[in-house]
Image (cartoon, rainbow over all chains, first blue to last red; front, side, top):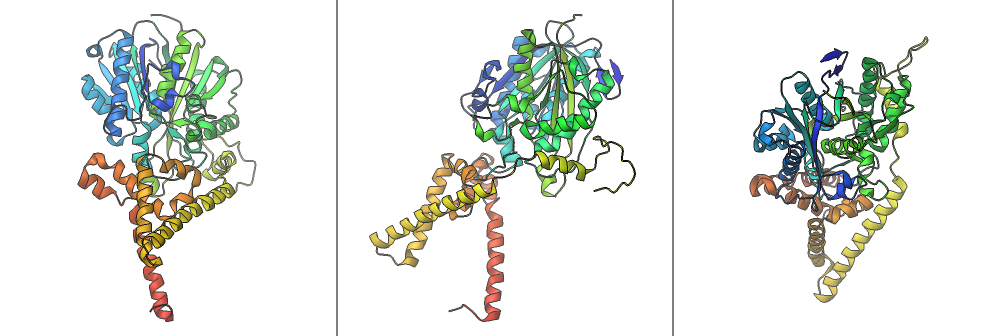
Length: 339
Length: 163
């Protein structure tokens, strides 16, 4: 592995040999429904508590990813996971069920790419053959922990985002067929003083723009080298801000499709309750491991840069008037080439 | 604004001040529909009060109660309606449309207690329901009491009101 600035270049190009994506009913009504492995028809995910529901999603996704990778769960050498719950209970409890060595990570909604980057690094360095990366979020666990009780009647502003219910896992391996992880750019914490916890897109946009800028600088690549660059999740407010900031940074985003997972997972016209779009750990995970990798396997996309963004706040920190520190991790996924 | 006098270097993210950024972010922030929200709050809040008035009239005519006697059962009925709507997952949807209209009347107070009780049932009756029920309603009670105390003092000092 080469280290260039903030970027890891994976010389052995770890392969994503299997993915599992499980979502809730609202995501099943969205435009990407066909890309998911399983859609629950109830928001409770047949469980008694929201927390158990989130864990169930992650357990299901991990099982599905192993199955599609064609390996048994006990062949996994590491599970790298995280989520939004206090003390990342969903991942840790899912790891208990999985019974493999576990590294818990936290990057809020950037956890999807943080875990994939760490998993790829473990594989690339030859430290393991099969590593699973995964994360999950549930709309109601997040509402309960960060905002108000789910049934509490308060009006959300139009720039609020809607935490998705879903889990995404991938199995990264040193050999096999599938899209390959070539680079990972690890972001720095950026905080430009946004304090409104509903305004996540605006809070996270600078982190995304910063990581994208660093990624191009470190790798010498340009936007046009990618078929698709997706952030996850800046939604309808944050994405235009990120575009503005990149322009200010003299980063030319022409020649690529610059999109956002939070805008892809829901039909914003029909699903009005999502306001500005989706968010949550699960969002970029299910969109990447479901929709984007499916398109890559079909040959519709060859080079994709996924920039997952996380708001590193806690309910305590914003109640105490602190601004929202944010982070973004970028992972480049490419088709072709073999070991 | 940070006052740099000579040619300022082009501001990228690493050098951008928080004030500069917030100006950019503000530009992209969709405005809250204040006027529309006021109208909706007026209509829904008014409607809830109208329903309350009807219930009160009902108690006054059917059970021959005085205005004062009818007020307690009226509030109780409104609370029950709110709790039922909360439990069926409807109240929060009304609130997204109505804003303050469904938050300010007594039904909003009932919703805040009922939603918290439902949400924290998973943590048990004592530490969950009991301890968390007033999580949102608590501040209403605290500041309601404080406000009543201050108003009471003003009345006592000025010698107005009373019996």
